[in-house]
Image (cartoon, one colour):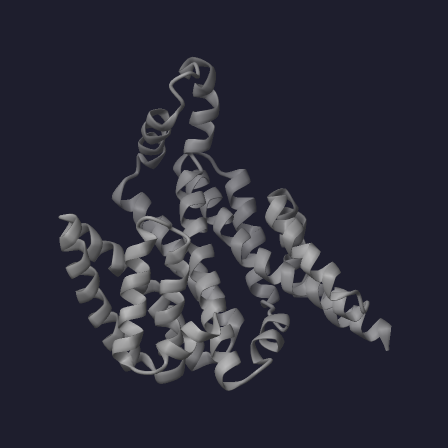
Length: 295
């Protein structure tokens, strides 16, 4: 995908064309939205907040024009705004702070504020999700049999949806940072990613949040559990970086490392122990211990 990064960096009009066209295509193929966001993030990381905002504005105008073809101008404009505004903010923070961990934590914070804001706007979020899930249930399945499961899942759907959105932001940011490194600092993203870590204070706060969710009840417990789902995103990324470091310290084949990531993709349940590794690393510095033992 290096050719796309090169095209994006040729100028603001090329960047805006890529950002808006990719976003429009993502209406039909949602994963492409990550590439669209990454294109905007790349411009912001390399050329600053103002240039990123300019490309943002041109792209939003282009997206609105493309939306007119579908007869849904307001929807496509809102889609572009929701898709690009968070990644533009996070890219600014990464450019200023030069710490990948800070950018990821900021993305999680934005997601957390979104969850809290949603509950302030709609305290009956679980009921809303239950109605949506009920409508999505297959016609050949008994709703009476599914109702208990749907009611249980509905309480966590806000956190699940926001966590999925934040995953998309972070993947887009990683892609943009990788593009930037390939064009201007070969190998830079790998070193930055493998150094990904969070502070013990943040890890303690995440554990305290789970404790609050477990010990409280009602609305407070529901909001706390949804926020806990979001912190899971953060420590999944940290845990994968730690595991990658450990495999490097053990001098395992690159195919083993590749297999590790494929396994996580195919068996998502393995993300839970990976996230636990990410939390543990805040205190135990696991990657440093393995590196020291190898020397």
